[in-house]
Length: 115
Image (cartoon, rainbow, N blue to C red; front, top):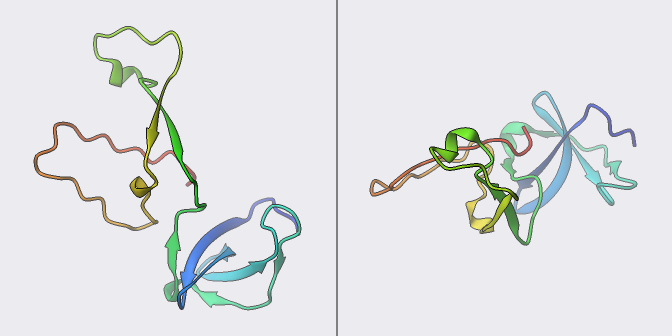
């Protein structure tokens, strides 16, 4: 299967979670190993019939902090990248709602993972 210029999606359809190839508003489900030997099943599912999910199921998320000049304020840039852990509960499916508590101190939104 050729992988260039394809939009792979992970989705839930009728209680089952699968991967597929998105073309416009149609998903072509794939079977097998997504990274070696995935094959299209021949089925077609309308995008409106599924709930899109985040693209993978990580067991943990490591992030880099203080890597934007605007986040540093008056502080000097760190000598080494500052890594921190994020729980997988912070993931949000495409189109999901971000809930920001009213008592928040600061909110920073980032959408730099797969677009």
